[in-house]
Length: 275
Ligand SMILES: CC(C)(COP(=O)(O)OP(=O)(O)OC[C@H]1O[C@@H](n2cnc3c(N)ncnc32)[C@H](O)[C@@H]1OP(=O)(O)O)[C@@H](O)C(=O)NCCC(=O)NCCS
Image (cartoon, rainbow, N blue to C red):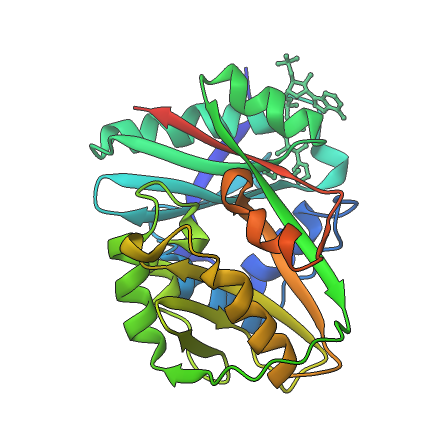
């Protein structure tokens, strides 16, 4: 008999959940430290529903977390971590079985997730429940590009960019790049426009800057607008290290190659399960 049980995550405090997530991701492929602020940002941006997220208990002790984000009929496994001493003994399998059953019971149609390709335990776990890869998601990096551009960028409201991403972007964009998530970004992040090309970057006063969105309106694609935009952004904010999180569909990454960014070693599978 299994001694596992679930409790709704909203019966725990934010610091308790943050601590359990940090421990659940100990020894991960990229260092993960979730503090209270980082967790609050994740909940807000990505639509995580704590009442449907679960703390996993073994013999009444919390040993893991499964965060569930929800939008309409779709849910996403936003994080799943089991503390290291409890791994590889069926905990993840028990948790996934129940998370999938709960999603079906509440009437969801589809569940998404992303998993690092090299994460054998994670990939095996999700495949076991019927999750299928839709595409590979990749990331890029570039330190201190030497670029000069005469192009004039126009700063726009992030909300305007989010509306365009929802309208012009791929329908099944990874959750964190979708219009609904982009809509939750706020200053000091900033959005820029050059003709029909748009982008969203994290606070450009920091040394490390993330590129959260790059979009060309559907009717203007194929004219090479996005590299021109990105070079103008690099020129406006010199001496930065630029990061493209490993969340971008491989098939739309030509722009990053073209502007000389280097591909990160870590890549992910975007996976889906029809419920
Ligand atoms: C991924 C994770 C959630 C899986 O939970 P778990 O309790 O270890 O999983 P289980 O014991 O139920 O094992 C699931 C499958 O993975 C396999 N597996 C587990 N650990 C493994 C390892 N280190 N190497 C290879 N396979 C492994 C198991 O054999 C099992 O496959 P099987 O049913 O075909 O035998 C857990 O290992 C974890 O929290 N890792 C760190 C955080 C993380 O990677 N989260 C996922 C992010 S998407």
